[in-house]
Length: 340
Length: 292
Image (cartoon, rainbow over all chains, first blue to last red; front, top):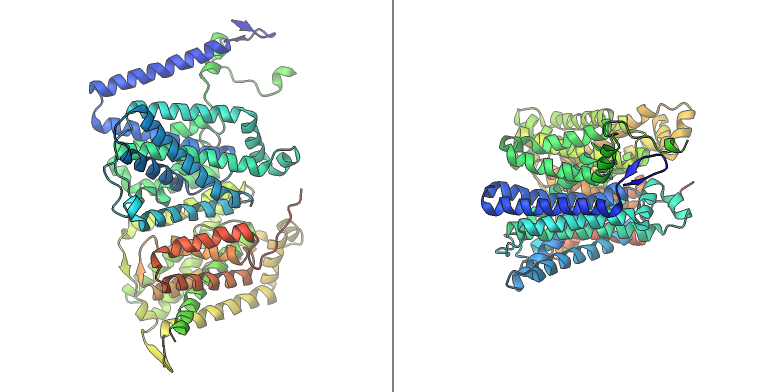
């Protein structure tokens, strides 16, 4: 065990990675065993897959909303781009192997990212609410395009018989990898530049951060993972209709991010899990779902604008370190206090 | 002749968009809030007219009730949802506005179901047609254009000639300085919401006379297009909202006349994106440099 000067024992970095990797692998094996052994019925496994897809959607929206501080309202549009791209690729390439699955997801994500860039470059040069309305408009344009190009997208009746590639394994690995990529990006200097823009754009710009570049970058990354999630969604339902990607879908994802905490990945994940599982578990709740979501949005903004978890992020190694130091239940020291 | 009648058609639609866009622009000018709920207030207005006329109320009285209902709802929303967030970050205010919009739509849906109902448009404005030469104009068209232009003139006089109008201009220029001059900010903001939503109430009646169907979602698309109109004209600018409203109305009629009616929504949003690319301050707006 490494020790700091003040006697706080730390876990070596390689061990932290090892613990996390082992736990993630254990969850994968356990989940796969549960699903393939039939201990979990079809409805329950469908809920699990949906939760995974919505986690990715919420985490990706969190990049643009929580970390960058913008408010895109067309997340379902990027999801649609990814979903239709992946679906068309999978339909034209028969067979089920890892290469085809990855190709579909990546192509969906990349096309969504390119669309994000095209939308983001004009909208992000401006301040404030324009981005919200432009992305909202973009989401509508995508829907109109899908409806009016039936030759490619199947039009209003939808795109049928998409190969169902989204198994538990595929969804799990994609979601974990995506969260890891987003996390590492946010811890890099690029991530810090994005956070600096959220805190104060003018100050960031005067410190030499290329604000337009980083805004478009964060926005495209957000769109990319929304596209990947769209691909997972296509492989999960097997049918895509334009109605799957309307404004309400975007709002659903936004509610998850706002409720979990703007800027907290753990918050997005927990909120996505609860808000996806709850309506499926309580059928009678469905009727009042949107009313409750609306009230939640207003109440959270008035009483706790930072969301349930604020900017807190879960870290297993931090908790373990606290435990081995016997400080699990003591309050964390405030920043700067230990340097006094 | 066809061209002329299409122009008048565009004028009718454009004047409705202009009325609604004025509400957006006034609220944005004064508290920098994109009031997402504005379109849904129009939907509530449509339901008020539908229910009161259905209950046998005189149509003229129903119109007055619609306007007062819209004003009441808007002022209430401002009090309950927006005022506690006056000093919060803009993104919180925007999320709240989206929440209010969702709430209005879904509560209406719970109360009256999502079914589309016919709007008693012909009870409010009789469906007659006037012949001017070879041109046939419906009474609705004429009333819409006259009422809208009349409301815009009234609004212009109110803003330019009255004390309250002066206070509104002062608050939108610099809220802090206006407060120091002894202007009651909260009152001015409430009055702004009230005037904006009175225009929305008038817009609601005129819009529903043109498209006589009502469901909980009619307000959202109308609201969005009116917002695009406000941005096109220069958000925060009153004449800009009028110009933008007519421009969007004409564009929409033109696209429909060319046979692409399925694409109108896409065209309106494409206009928005183009405006933001080439003239972000809008046609009549002033670009404002940010002070540090």
